[in-house]
Length: 116
Length: 203
Image 1 (cartoon, chains in turn green, orange):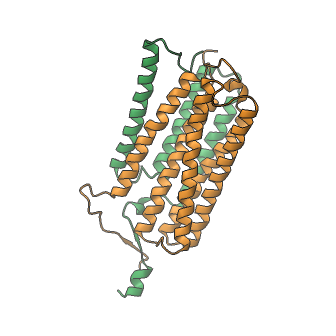
Image 2 (cartoon, rainbow over the protein chains, first blue to last red):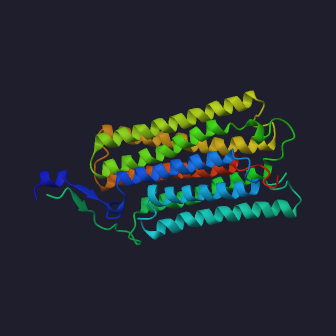
């Protein structure tokens, strides 16, 4: 192969070849936009009780979170090691949340945000 | 002639790209960073002894548009990555500039929101709600701003011909993209937990 031919090649990381097509990205973005619209819409539905609304909103946010992680951040296609790094951070963040809540509950501090 | 050729495996003990591994470790630590601020906000948002409450001050339609803008910036970011992967430098620059623009719209919207909140009587020192809100969303806005600067740096590298359409060039775009998507993911959580979730679900 000549040098000219080599310079025209686009050397691609093996993992990157597994990435979705632009069309797939657009489809994912469309789903994300629809979920966001649903989130905002149900926020205004007064018939839904606050606890049910909270559960629905957190569920929808979780779906968006996972979709961005899997498709846009390529966690679905890349090495599982990257996924473990990220999940470890998220789990530790929940531990921090739990520790802060426990600290305030046991020390008689301010009540958590979900109650007044 | 094939236009693509697989790069050799990375010569590291894990077989993985160290820079990408470092980025994921950094993003993992950022989860703790934002997790701490979100926890603090949830503790303090109902502790309003002076100034407006969250329910009184939030403008949900306005913030929904901002959220949509940031969400779509993640799409333009992955399209930028797809462009460099197929060697399309012009497409790369267009999508990077589009991402930067959407990021700027988001940050501009946040500046406007902060200004209107201050006008309505909510400052950092007004209440613990104000403090935790401004610190959390302010740090997020700072992250978006850093992301915009990195995106513009990529555009500059591309224009000067230093972002070659190779595995190395694509990796640079992918790393900045990971950071950008993380900022988006954090906003997904902030938008739901801070803006949409009712302050008192038992009501």
